Length: 211
Image 1: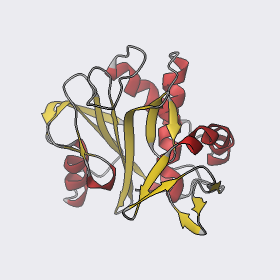
Image 2: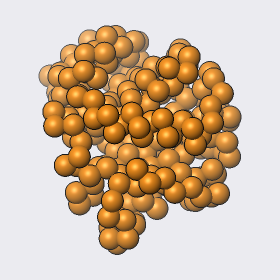
Image 3: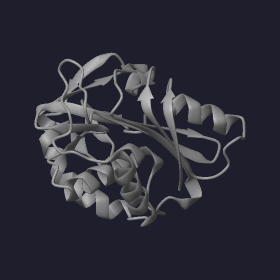
């Protein structure tokens, strides 16, 4: 995975999406900005951030993903891999369904995913130094370049989805104390049923994690 670093971008996700659409990026690539002025989050929200936080987007050829990984599970899969890397560094971070990084009951970051051509694009933002109101920062100190190198090596191991899901299934119980936004509604995860593809069932409606 080639990692390209920038001092500042408006949005790593928008930058990478545009480069792929224009065929300027044709291989697995990561874009990291030390400062991001107009980051985007899930549901097209603005991701508030400052210099010192993690802002990275990367693309992975779909044919190079683990064979048993449903695209609908991508958010959980790649978020959980990052969580595992941070956990090895003694962080207590956990993943709230489907793509939010939490310390205790406070959000410290998030992940978003989309598909363009034959690429899956993943964007990750984590509060390392600065957190907006009602959020928190990571509970350990990390070096961004070192963290990303370890993360992408871990991704290259192509760990099977079934192995990740077996661990995430246990962690999902923490999400039951929280709510999600879906189609303009706020839904409780208390009685959600988790399926093997990472989707959930709430009030007889299937909700998928790819977003």
